[in-house]
Amino acid sequence: MSVKAEQSGFTQFALLLREGMSVASNLARIRGAMGGNKVTLIAVAKSASLTQIEEAFENGVTEFGENRIQDAIDRRNKLPERIATNCNWHFIGHLQTNKVKKAVGYFQLIHSVDSLRLASEISLEASKKNMVQSVLIQVKILTDDTKSGYTPETLKEEMADLLKLSNIKIEGLMTISPLIEDRETWFECFNGLRNLRDELAQKHSVELKELSMGMSADWLEAVEAGSTMVRLGRAIFQV
Image 1 (cartoon, helix red, strand yellow):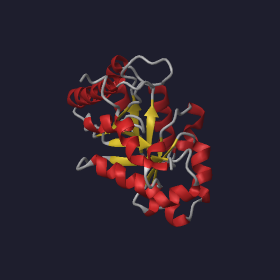
Image 2 (cartoon, one colour; image 1 turned 180 degrees about the horizontal axis):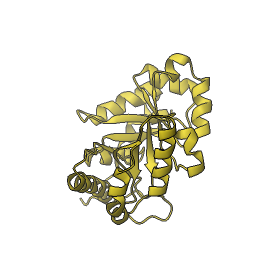
Image 3 (spheres, one colour; image 1 turned 135 degrees about the horizontal axis):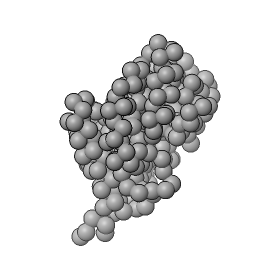
Image 4 (tube, rainbow, N blue to C red; image 1 turned 90 degrees about the vertical axis):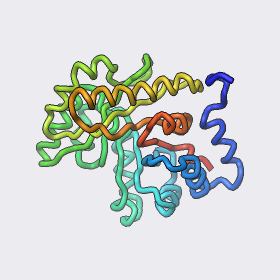
């Protein structure tokens, strides 16, 4: 059977979500499917209720992702203090330069740095706050007009300049696969990001430990390809 003909990871995984669905049971199945892989689970909270976020926290989730800054601020303010202050918050959406001031220092990790200009703005704001902001560089491995991100070629050209920015720390790379159910395409995307990471790390003698790749539809394939972070919303909160 060809890779294309096989069921996607989410199609297979979704079959497990038909019985006794709850945030707790979804998390148990996700962790079981991960096996021994050391992968950071980021729960994407944009469509979750506060009760579901609390349930995820009670079941060991301490990393939460948001696509919009104000949503993250509002949600965090409404959560019990023991949850809001004992979790790491990740910004995973498109970040506009005029929103950098709010994002820097608020999020543990910004996943979506897609230009030298944006990286420079983040570094400048971080310097004003006397801190270093951790970031990932977003890469568009495959042609996709609907998504932001560096092309591999442009990132290779600008990586040295990115590394010169003193108030950001580049922890690794992030990508979003094309919105089609095709495992062959997903693997091409994820393997491409891993190979690019390895090439950049070797060329610039830097550690790029994080590969943020894999969402609810394709996270099993991403883990197989070497993801260190998966960003899951409906796989956790669809009950």
